[in-house]
Image: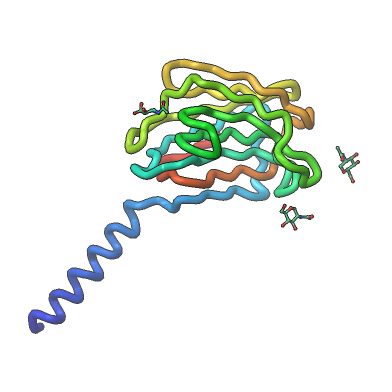
Length: 158
Ligand SMILES: *[C@@H]1O[C@H](CO)[C@@H](O)[C@H](O)[C@H]1NC(C)=O
Ligand SMILES: *[C@@H]1O[C@H](CO)[C@@H](O)[C@H](O)[C@H]1NC(C)=O
Ligand SMILES: *[C@@H]1O[C@H](CO)[C@@H](O)[C@H](O)[C@H]1NC(C)=O
């Protein structure tokens, strides 16, 4: 092998290595129901240049019962979390903003979400738990999606 082949091999190994250690920025779980008896646990790291990321739980694309949106900087919001939902592909409805903001760019966090037919409970770092109404009254959701400026480190449904 000449130097060029070694360099190519090294590049391939590096590529594979980083390909494996960098989880995808988006994650969609479809047609695998999340039940009221489950706990959804997500650990992640906001990107260093993060503007926002969110966790969505819904019946489908057009009916999202909970969007938990972490806004470092989005529209006029700074260091704010936003809870909202949408029905029949409406615009985001019943936005609830919260200034409790334990998230830091580049720092690992854990979010745990549970729900029943009445409410979602979103637990964020610092043992802070926020309740948001379950507007659909559903005890089973078919769509979970994480999107935006975050690296997902682990994702568990227990
Ligand atoms: C948001 O939080 C970061 C980190 O704690 C802080 O440096 C920054 O000043 C905050 N921004 C605002 C507008 O409060
Ligand atoms: C949403 O669509 C369903 C099915 O078409 C309908 O029954 C329901 O009333 C609609 N809800 C709203 C808020 O538009
Ligand atoms: C839902 O809304 C999005 C954008 O607002 C649109 O692109 C999409 O086609 C809509 N879906 C349906 C089924 O109407």
